[in-house]
Image (cartoon, rainbow, N blue to C red; front, top):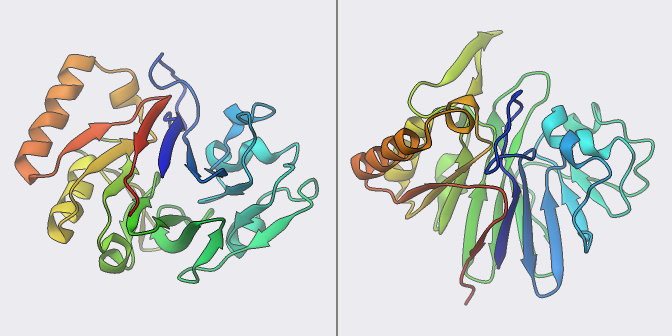
Length: 242
């Protein structure tokens, strides 16, 4: 199973050579290509060959805005996201539900509810191929069923909006925003996750001194005992499938 990080930039007003495009992940296996998230940067610029399906984590513009002009393949999203996404130009709309697995080719997906936004409720995806699994949550404050989401995964792919200080506020007594990398590594340590990769990079990472950024990430990896890296546009990771 091949993971290609097509974009790794969050909804911020700066870009860099390493983090230029809105966050988007392409999963490929046995000629099946599935794209997760299609933000405004991808409007009219879908990768070629085009994916067989698009999955949406939530309906914020940096995750779903690229669908404004439609999609030629099936698009999978929760009922909450379909209420927000302008779906008139998407002829093949598939409604998915949390904790109800579905398959696309040889790939198996399961959506897990997250806290991130009240206006655009989000899910993360557990992605399985054979014996290999990863969990993908590019925008997250917390994961409701963390143990089930992380069980036996090879990689956690998480939210890089902030390194040590989370970006949080309360709305209707619910925390919304972004957990820090530090918080997410605590989850990984608790659940025994062997590797963490962070995408959806925020201003701190995209606009910061890269040497200092990597020192901070290395220090956190050592503190929590979890090998940790930052994704960048174009990064490819091969996950062994047995």
